Length: 313
Image (cartoon, rainbow, N blue to C red; front, side, top):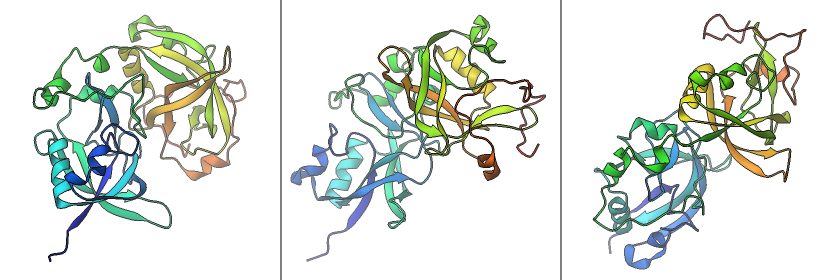
């Protein structure tokens, strides 16, 4: 008897354990599937939830978004073919081999990964996730088989997930009230912005002041530094676009959803966009790590003469 060929696939959305479509992997009629381990992509990708069906899409825009977490499965050919049908392979999704990081001891495991290639640019304005979970706020809904063209759904301009809905942003530096760039949030020409509350990051990060312009930088080194104090604002799409310009996103800064804890009222946790520096000289970590930024006479913020920020100044 011929040996059964097995392929490794990395799943990041509704096929994971505990998610709505996991039954497709666990039903023997579809073929053979064996859970191997958890892992995360070795490259950053944007993972977003879109359309009225709240479907998770991994966009083929490497270098943008987060290192996406998911699960590795070993599949036989019949089940692999079933996944191609589910993902509408070639028509909607493409698939390629990507290295998946499974930890220090496991190293990298090459796996098949499904990606949405021809995506509308506005999908990149949606919140980018590190890990997908089906939630009550955005419940996944199965679409009628054969009756819905998902690509047409993605192109619809009236998709509520792609509208000018307000988004929450956590600011920790010169955009706060009383700081030099707060006028960006109050200038109606930039869009809408409404103060929500003071808050702190739930994860510790290093906040430093650097360059001859005395700019505050939040370094993407979670677990180092302090839980950073800042403010939550609700902004529209126009204002978010302006903030991207101010922060030189994605060339200098990256931004991703992070949980912050409100310091007033019930102290609840909010998920907000936050700007972080990923690539920086390691010597920045030797600078004083701040818990809260304030513009000070001894280190006054100076507006940069151009967008080319140099850390060696």
